[in-house]
Image (cartoon, rainbow, N blue to C red; front, top):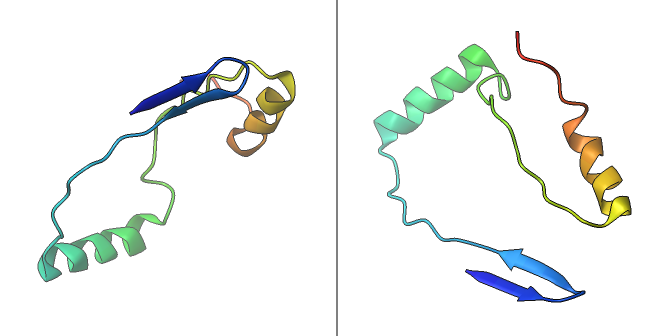
Length: 70
């Protein structure tokens, strides 16, 4: 879904229909989580598009400075 108003901003959203995992799958996920840690499994990038300069600075805070891959 997209909703946009000039000088007010835009809102993007989507829905996903997902199935619940089985107890066995849940146990496997818990074991994997303990093995590798809570955040080490997440690798990727996030695209933030912001035209307000203050919001751009705020958006940089949690993500940090991009580092070259190597």
